[in-house]
Length: 230
Image (cartoon, rainbow, N blue to C red; front, side, top):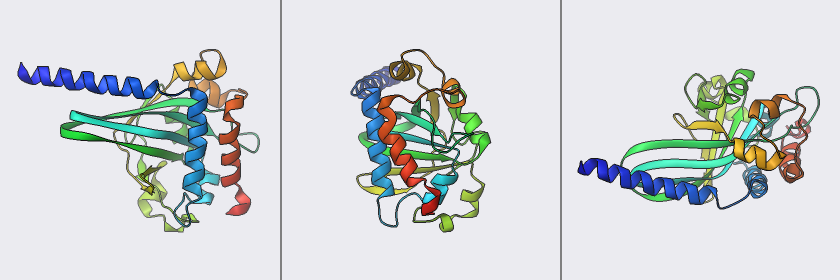
């Protein structure tokens, strides 16, 4: 009974933390944060995401400030966006909102905040992420992505992975494994951005006009995925 009481308190504490964290900003602010994260990562000399990989990616998922809270039970929570290359034209499409959630069990105390970027390298990975709920590393392989000016540092595991993942915490940047984290579509944020409820599938596969708030992120994606810059 005591164990159940501790679990309940820990769960309530984590719920409060994530609720406050997720209510701290607007969809437009998170889009600008996503652009800032991408610019910071891509501007790192010889340590950014290879531009040729970004140019080849079907989609990019950016989650600024994934928060980790831990007190007996640990958990991860973050809100961000999925943006895909336009299939019939150059450039990128409208952003679709996502939530990243994941948990661990153990006696942990502390917290941290990490920016997460994922490159979806194959159409099957894109299809999986368009489900209402998707577990990373389940049916679709996920690996920490290579860093540098080009993707020449890729390993066999990275070359086979359908999704390449990266993180940035306290200025440090590297490829990371995100197996087990759950990615869900965020219908509330989509409604905030587009004025009506749209699923991620409708946004990514439909001819949806990007909101004005996405202009900075769109410009950054265009700049850093330019095939001319290799």
